[in-house]
Image 1 (tube, rainbow, N blue to C red):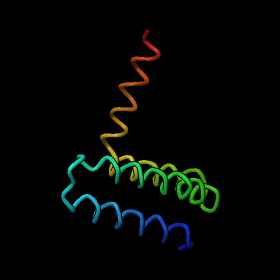
Image 2: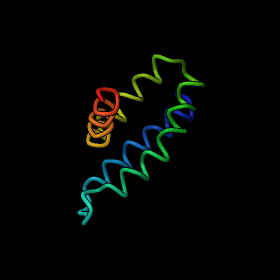
Image 3: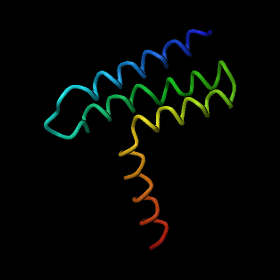
Image 4: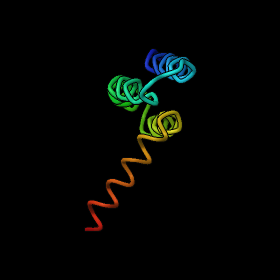
Length: 82
């Protein structure tokens, strides 16, 4: 297993721990932090392990950050639809 996959596994553990801690802002600051760390990690995983493993990592990350993804999807539909 490559070091980039270990890094993604650590990102998943960090995301689970941060989700378990109570927050006043509904975890949005933590989500921004995880996105800022996760995007370069996703590129690294895709570069080292290929596009299929990168796609799996993207799906796993989106499952942890589902609300930012839902809001992004709604915003994109609103912008494209108007």
